[in-house]
Image (cartoon, rainbow, N blue to C red; front, side, top):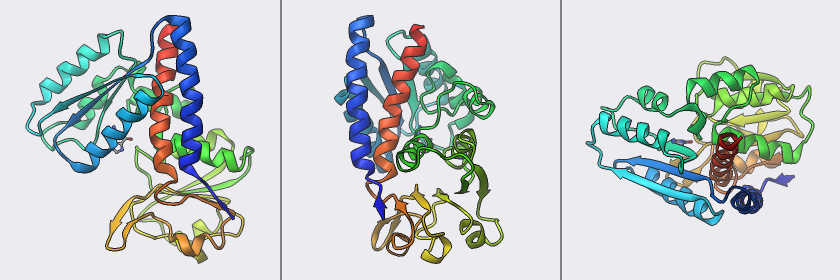
Length: 281
Ligand code: GUN
């Protein structure tokens, strides 16, 4: 069984990105910049944003975090985004989700120009990804994709089962696997016989937010299992996959923590660099 080491893969990717930033600095005499907007004091968001800032600095990006209190007005956020859209030192803009309820998520996502949308959430990027054109790709599915490709470089004709249909994970994950010529089944909470569907998968990506949903007898021998779940339970943080059982059956599996999580942040840095490069050409 291969334990997919997301921490190590993310460190390798950051190392590559660091070299690339250094080359870009020589070529253009400037470095890519990432600006993160954080609203409110939701602890997980604060931790994510701190990690993003630390990693961005580590690879040599210009990194900035702008913080607002929970009660900030929507227009303040939209005006800041308009300002950042015009700022040439900012290559990528990310507004940390979730947002307070009085702020319209769709308006905020669409205010960021697609060229600086490092999350890949803007409808233009979503459309480009589904049409097979160049686009920013959401960081978590991009990280999953890179981990899968490390284990199995040729995915053509493989059966992939994605559990979860969110805009953040499930849907973009599906597009990436389709691009690789996988036959993809998207499943979700209303799917009948989820176990039967999972059993058909050469690749199973679980991104549904239900602790240890995927059991050992749901998984085909020799499959690749990617666990996107981060669920708080009384026994600590667990994924969407029952790791102890599934790791006995699968060919390869990501642990939680230390699997997909570290890759997500590394992919955000990658997306920021890609946005910078496109802005220079
Ligand atoms: N909150 C949790 N995951 C994400 C993400 O990938 N992007 C943003 N903007 N917010 C998040």
